[in-house]
Length: 274
Image (tube, rainbow, N blue to C red; front, side):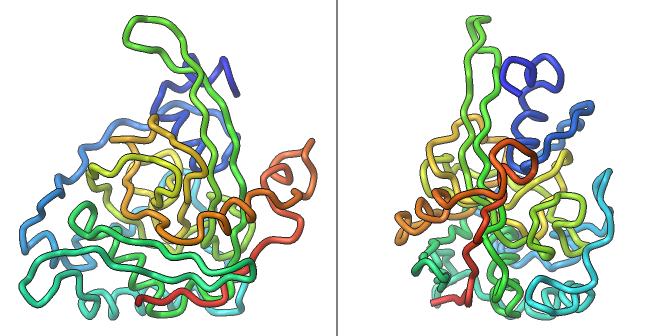
């Protein structure tokens, strides 16, 4: 992919393909305006599920698998998330949004993710609602993405960008973007969070409104994502666990997608708000 991504797809397409762990080619999706969020109004903090999401599937999407890797019906989750949506508080007693911690208990150890509703309230609420209804319980860290590609710097010179991340939350457990969703998709939100080591966001495909349930954790700084992919949290405990997950042997280093899929993936036992 290095040396070809800029010429074939441009920066945005290269970024999104890297996030998705998808090796297909194609024309870049049209840019869509991001909802302005930092210091959100009460209306933005309380936006209903129907306004925050769309049922329009991105191009190339298939139906989700009938059941998740943990054996639960995927058809039930959109309704469960919608019902849980309004019951997920994002503010304190004074009506101010503050950091929220979610704990992932995994086979490899405990990971704590701090979420920032003042940056991306709908993305945070979606993650919390999915955790509340038990969607992530029994799913796995399904892919380790390590990609390089070339972009054009402001001075006209080419520079190599590196993307390193792990992904989790695919219903089928294989990280295939075609069915790695639950049938609803989040509208994009702007976020001032920088993509540093430990930054968390939802996986996209090749359209802005394609985030659903898969999430990524950056293994290293990824500034090419800044302003292009909605970041909504950061690992604040257990980054050593994330690196241990990323260091596990893959199925086949010489074959895609097996080169991104751990031979013995780490399972998320539970995901719960503190």
